[in-house]
Picture 1: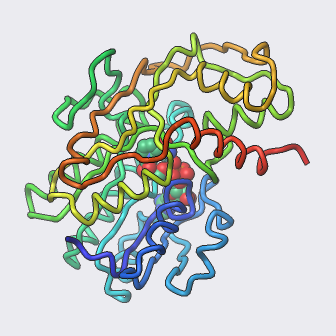
Picture 2 (picture 1 turned 30 degrees about the vertical axis):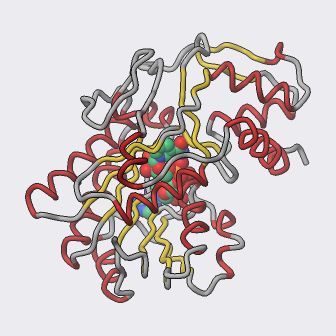
Picture 3 (picture 1 turned 135 degrees about the vertical axis):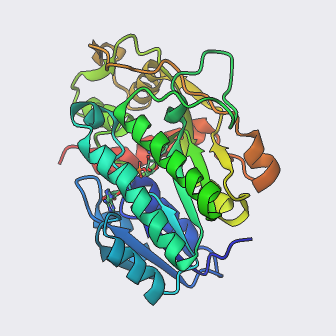
Length: 320
Ligand code: NAD
């Protein structure tokens, strides 16, 4: 088992990272969670309100592209490992301007790998189901599925995964990769599908849905995801890829309808808009290896988990 004693958690002010910080702090063997986040538009210090009262948590504003900073932090805090959640994460933005995605997701991960190698600590890379491109029904991708990313975002994530694996092959570096499906949960940035739909519904504004709305995503509660990331870091076999998915498949249109029903709003608010270029029809991961080797599976049922999240997000997104 890898040690959770002192973790450098990058991107900890983001959606999944701030949940992962909470999950790490529940573990008594954790002595230190060092958050490194450059606070882009997507990062928010308020996401850490609560955990920041724990003396084991420390926040450093800085970039994963800064090799000296990362190496010095790893040395000074005698870190036992890195969990890399820092990324540019919104597909639409990657289509408008891929540059930051290539810089942060590829360059930043490469920098972290270099720093990890220099002090000999393991690195967990948080990746995505999107690296495989569309998976046609009724198949589920296993970990040997060919990478066929469609967007600049997913291509940057696939590239980072390949670089991490090359570092293992070339230098014997201890890396593990978790590919996660779509997360839902509190503290997600309002530009993402679920908060965006809730925001519009609460204002009786049209809910924009790309194309037919028949695109299928597998929805994983962010707390399940965070637990899966910890299990992958602790128990994952070096250089192996693990799928963190829930097999709760829903169409985007179905998600919009569920939100409207819960908020007692009419379906006529749904507005179909021009489709996103290169929009993948379906993502579907087979998470069996994570069950067998990590003893992890998603536990929060979609129905109750989703209801709760819509309630929580409605509180923060309601008109003031
Ligand atoms: P997010 O956009 O909410 O958070 C990203 C965080 O990274 C932000 O706090 C941002 O400030 C920080 N960051 C960006 N560039 C940085 C840099 N150069 N240095 C330091 N910090 C930087 O993203 P998220 O949804 O929490 O996703 C986290 C990870 O999980 C990403 O790698 C993403 O690709 C992956 N992932 C997300 C999902 C999902 O559904 N959200 C699904 C699969 C995989």
